[in-house]
Image 1 (spheres, one colour):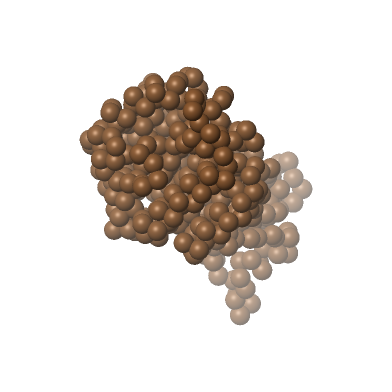
Image 2 (cartoon, one colour):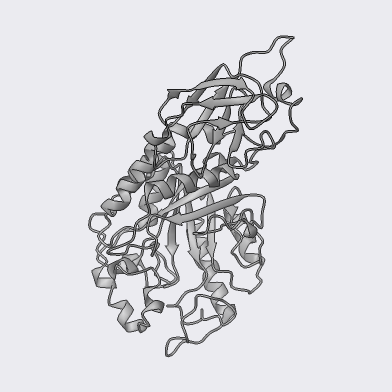
Length: 418
């Protein structure tokens, strides 16, 4: 009678394992898109506020937003090069500019030279290519006359001349926009609220769920921390804000901006692969952002990063789908994911030597593979010079061949006999 690998390991150490319960999170990697009229300035998605522009000065960007080269399939091509399986795009950022054909305001993409419903085209392309489609929606709105909210962050220093702050009127405006977004663009997998308003309105999420029963909602909305998942950003190590058992960490290929920025400081492949590895091994999804230019093209540097990072991710993708195992080894640098057939050893911070000691595990694997290069590794059960009992030793790992990737090792154990 065969014993499972799980039971085989029990005599050596107490195992704890868990798996992510959210079905959508089976799609572990997503592509975030910050695109709006702010791309004309090429500075930052919050340019209006950061540079202290007037409303009239900012509106001068509208005639320059051509999106002449926008092709939704090119966006999906970029996502697929990364290995992403869902897309989340800014329907409206803090500036209030809407990327869809809305009846709620003239401050939208149809009143630019673009004259195309970006959300409609992208949502239809996603459906055609089996890419899940999600929406980001900013609660601050610097353009709307009723939206100024002194209880919230990310507001202009003061309302625009002639504005009349009124949260009741503004909430009605938001609900009208939600009704358009969640009715006219097919299935929406997730709603990424941004900037909690510190104004409680449980009707908001209720409306979202009514219009899209299968949607997942993050925790930055109108009901305090109400929502299905938390969304830490940039500082991916800040797990303190995991308000829900499900987490989606987001970061951008640009270190300075989420929207398109000329002369951006781009992330390195090493940073992205190690960050993605750590987050996925911590039971978090990862949403990587790109900022298109005002003509609709994607920056070459960003595309290159997506491609290089994706080449790594596609080789190691199976290693993220399984149960997270803790307390298997005394090595605190390793993250372990278990599937019915394999143990995957992840080293998000890299390795400083060409061998690993998996004390107190002392079962010899049938096979040890460095997934990054598909290299077969050597293994033995020995008593290390610094221990008094045997443990599993994997050695001759070609670490210097992958200087900008976290090593991921796959172990296969032989069938056990009674």
